[in-house]
Image (tube, rainbow, N blue to C red; front, top):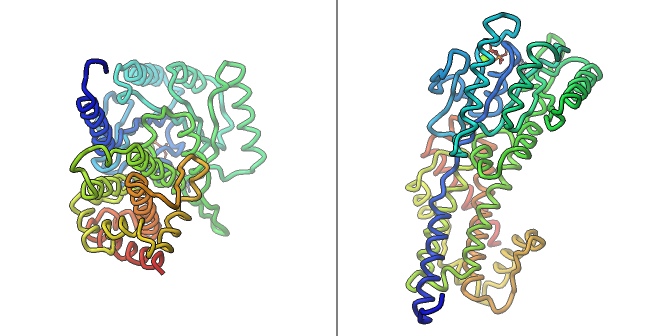
Length: 395
Ligand SMILES: Nc1nc2c(ncn2[C@@H]2O[C@H](COP(=O)(O)OP(=O)(O)OP(=O)(O)O)[C@@H](O)[C@H]2O)c(=O)[nH]1
Ligand SMILES: [Mg+2]
């Protein structure tokens, strides 16, 4: 930056930092595109209802692109589903269907806009079918060649373990012989299976979510994690990432460098961070709701901020540090003494970020999907939980 005065340089730096944090605030969740394919009755709809919000498949706006594909989405959930319709694989008609499906997905996946592509394919095969050949195998080969992350879901796993494992091994070896060793296979029972004598509990959904995330491109993961309702662990990991991006911005000195931007602006950023965390748990809470929570709860940014340097609050301080200690290995260093303004803002953000995650996790576990869609219920209960957590921390 030659030819600029120091003052100009500083101003430009400020501008760049301000942009970066604004970007952080604005970034909304990307919508993940998932294709679910497989022959009729394998359990695609059952699987979708178990992984995503239950109203998605039932009330989603199904806009068939072709007669062979149904689309589902929802205004509240950052996911878009492509589901094959009535695939039989034996008939002549199916050959045309397969071509149409393949072309649709391939066209999307050639899109310049990476957000518009299909980000993962779940191909469902009934675990009891013991069939991996002929037209279906051709179809899989065809879909796989598009180059989208591909997972075979062995559905309705209620049969003999050894038989299912043998079937999986057979699929693996056939895939390997055809250059498709990158295909992951996950065994799933999407909903409990009740028989007269006993119930087999659902399993495998967590593994399906984890495997999908392992293969899915990074830029889309946030949307998928928010949309799925299976893995709380993945939601927490994602929320910690959100907190650390705000903490990082604070540590880089955003609040130091921008004149007149003080603790009040930091507070607003923290509210934005809460909103992002809320979105990750699919709790319908607007910015107005977040503001209500901040106002009506014991959340007190200014006092906490001042408490971070006041020796009187040493024990409080200690609690915040122990909260953050877990993260020290990942490079988040906090010095007890000599806390400058940046570090204090960083601590403030982390402290309330963790408080909010803990509160919303509790809400998410206790409440039904329907309850989580009611903003008043969400806000009122979050206020209660946050107050309890803050009271416990202050003891
Ligand atoms: N208990 C239990 N039943 C399942 C599961 N998956 C599928 N089923 C049963 O299999 C039937 C068919 O499942 P669907 O989810 O409708 O299958 P689909 O692949 O969507 O079928 P099409 O829409 O016709 O292509 C359901 O009525 C369920 O009874 C499962 O994970 N657990
Ligand atoms: Mg279906």
